[in-house]
Image (tube, rainbow, N blue to C red; front, side, top):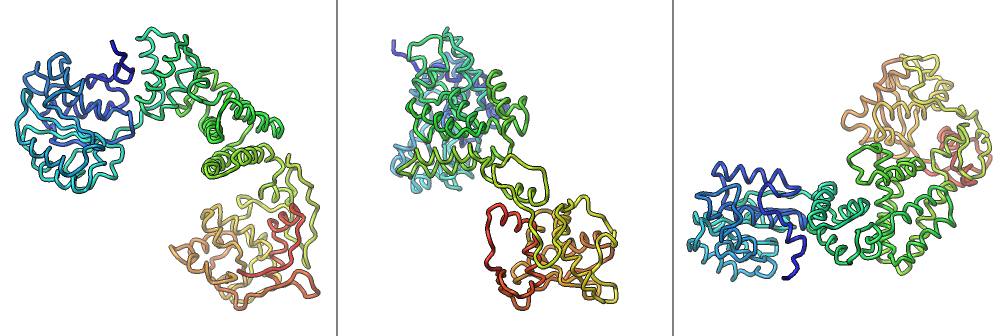
Length: 557
């Protein structure tokens, strides 16, 4: 007797057998029980999630010859049920939309639909991959689909519902089939292996379930390939030997070398993976998958349902996750995803892979902005292997205090600790102007805490020019951001936040610089207020010190 593949042998036969699509199965059962079966259904979803299976079950339920009317529990023994299972029933016509997509074929279907079924209650048309029909074919079907004969039912299945024209979709009841979770697939695989009396290792099941990407049929096809090797018990090693899946231990070792900042070890681990016959893209995919698991552990803990790993794998992943922080993992995953697409079009994919993973391993040799700022502000030393920054001297004026207060530490409504620029009569003190200019970065941090990063970013590059009465003039190099600062009530929000800090009620007025200046740093001229702010900004000083750079020119943008 010919061998029947697992995907066919263990295909669901009744609504209660359906795996992973219980909500849809329950809805169809209720429709049958209440006599509300629609004349047309559209089943959508990725491959192998049960669209055609449920279409056949629905056909059997409607046409079972042992029942006097449509039933939710077809007998599976009558001539109609058996013929539907094999796709040979004369009243249940299965059509492949990819190869029968012309208007002439749909016209023939429409002409045959007027005839009553030979032996069953309904003539049922199941059209798979219906999105492959031409527009003319869809249009030929519209009238019949809108007002079909009482004895006709249509069931359409597609993996690309966006290609099904709206006039067809509006005439159908649509059901969207979800991808089946790896846990559900894993349980089904275990059940099938037990029924087949095959021995297996637990470490095998979850990787196969994850490789299926939500498709039960794909999972069963992969299992068929493993069974055909003749090896028993089925082990995780077979995934590497016969399915080309990267060895989990070697991927783990590669990420460990990255965590150790071991450049040579990272290259050696890559070489071990390449020598097993893996391509660069396969390695990238495996590293992304593993780092995603580490990110889930760092973000949601080891007991989260989002983690699809065995107990032993969870323990190892948890230990490795402690060596990364979430920000590192997010950056690594996004960088690898970009690398994946670059590798496809590169003549030197191995070099790109080596360079990218070495970038992760040597990340301690790179200094980010936060570390630069921390060093300049006298923060604790970090593990960055860079030349320590020397203390910078202020340019032309006393610099801003080295340790900037956090916005949460700033006084609220205390005019003595944060001097006012002027009084209510509009007088303006030069000393107060300098004090406010010094504290302006701190005030922007207050605005960041209260109003968010977006508003604070809009104020970057601005400077307080002075008071006119109760209005604080905030100057921008150009007029580009003024309109955005004034929109959506943002000016009033900024005014309220600054009023709390300055200890008096103020208004805000935004102005553009009258004549943008370009100043050279070098030269005998006395620095302007604007230039003073730039040269004494902690961020600028940190970058200059960290990169051992020199500013040659300051320009307004």
